[in-house]
Amino acid sequence: GAVVSQHPSWVICKSGTSVKIECRSLDFQATTMFWYRQFPKQSLMLMATSNEGSKATYEQGVEKDKFLINHASLTLSTLTVTSAHPEDSSFYICSARDWTGYSPLHFGNGTRLTVT
Amino acid sequence: GQQVMQIPQYQHVQEGEDFTTYCNSSTTLSNIQWYKQRPGGHPVFLIQLVKSGEVKKQKRLTFQFGEAKKNSSLHITATQTTDVGTYFCAGQFTSNSGYALNFGKGTSLLVTP
Image (cartoon, rainbow over all chains, first blue to last red; front, top):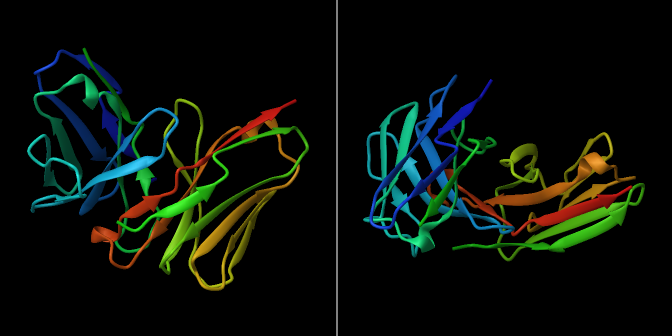
């Protein structure tokens, strides 16, 4: 149980275009999902906390107008990278809990974004 | 934000040798979790420590949480090639929005046969 599906696995786009990444909890409801970014051989950096039915909470230094997060239902959160630039190329991973509080995170497989 | 420091960044051992990675926080943690990420994969949950001084074992892996709940360690006895990957500690602070986790930088373990 507790499976998180992330799509797409990889995407290549041109500078200036927008890319949408989907994160779904398949067998549980997630009122909160988390979006992380990981550079090669580096740690996971929390970008934002996605809350179902309300605005996302962004970490300091993360541009909310560039990284649009929508948590439309208890099983789906999306991250849209708007007007992508090469420096946005990275590995984006979503995660969710199957209950609130201090439970472990279940991660999606991640999305490798390359902006040319 | 509050940070979790993790050392060493890299560790290269011969198969059969032991391995330890350490995490430290300047402020008290609500709990600490450990994850393993294989090359090209996503982090996978290993264990969660909640209580002060807690020690948990999973076969050859031993996890400890400090008495002050500010540090933790993961020790692997007699490493195997299947232990290769990056081990992350992740701390949870009561002030974190939505109970988010702050990850350490990870320790990349390489095991040669």
